[in-house]
Image (cartoon, rainbow, N blue to C red; front, side, top):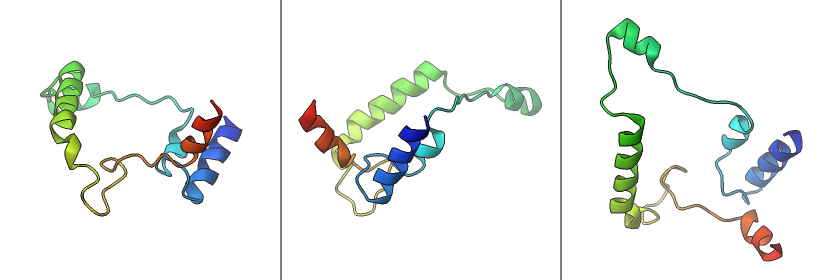
Length: 93
């Protein structure tokens, strides 16, 4: 994992990474989201199931796909992916 994280940090620092710089922080770490504590302590229930949330998010993406890239300074989550080093790697595959 160490060499992969180092490569991710380097390509991000020189502007060749298609990922945001924070991706190196999360690489190789287990992540999950558990809402049971909020549900128990706040008597809260989520509005959507995971499946419904993913489907609605994807439908939104499809409806707004043409909007990305037309605004200056979009966050990394909304901007089109910059291929960077992947363009070079793809030539060798």
